[in-house]
Length: 281
Image 1 (spheres, one colour):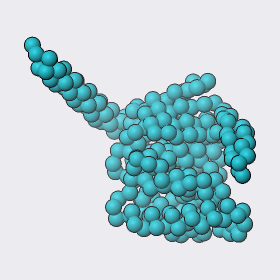
Image 2: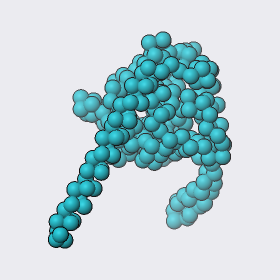
Image 3: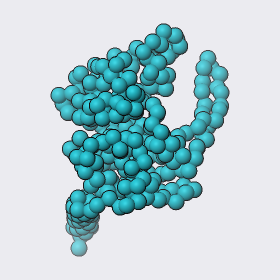
């Protein structure tokens, strides 16, 4: 057998194996989705979810739409506890917020997400700042992080924020980053329908530029204090912070930034001011 013939046969074999692997993954996901559609919520999940104000405020039809999505999400992602055991409450709460975020987006979301690393308490990491040629090193507290196919969640903070909604929700924040990654570059532009791209980019970048200017001089904050200095870090953080507010402080966001609220409502296809506005009353 000639060298080139042998090489061709090896390439063909590898292609067949790769095709078989893709076919198996497709079949497995279809099977898991079918099982999720037929399966009720485990009682332990139901008890955990009923403690969440966000879940309790949802109408029954949306809870039913969430049920198979949550079960499927939990089955197709690898939850890993770092210093704690992954239990049903952790799976239920993280799956709920991940699927709430994309509830009305018909396509399968988070195709890149594979691992969810859950830490019990705050993570301390080194942070180096430079200003005027002077480097300063400090410890920073990390509540969560997202990078491509992995999300890091600090459970102590995530659980507290879920049970007692404020303006922050680390699960929503980090999963918003994963949505942002789906377009290839974290730039504050998630996988938008073509009809929304023009108005979204105009609104986001206009508001981001104003916020960044006010954060730089640390004056004349006005309504932009709602968004905060962290949202001025870059466009990706701006998107994640506004996404948090869209679900946790929707009436306030709608009042002070109706243009942002409209863009987020059109993309997520949820009127969160009607669903969750009672948080602020």
